[in-house]
Image 1 (tube, helix red, strand yellow):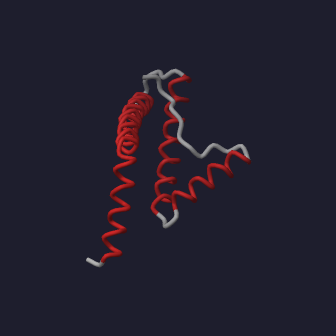
Image 2: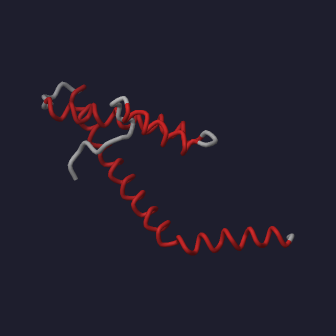
Length: 113
């Protein structure tokens, strides 16, 4: 390794160490959000299965299921953008642009815990 490479590695290591708790906290929060999203998606599928089976479904439950489906589709779109180079900046720009035009591109929570 060159001396410059070692300095770069040391800088990155120091930045990670100084932000370690923040990174760990963010990862825990992400884990909770994903668990919640999984539960909500399961509830959505249960509602759709009942609907297809001909059971009576309240309009409120069907609306919540439809909102969850929209959130899933929004998430898929955001994931595609995130995968592109500079994707995180593009998502931030699109969120800001969406707010300007009154369009919400971020998923929101639809089911109660």
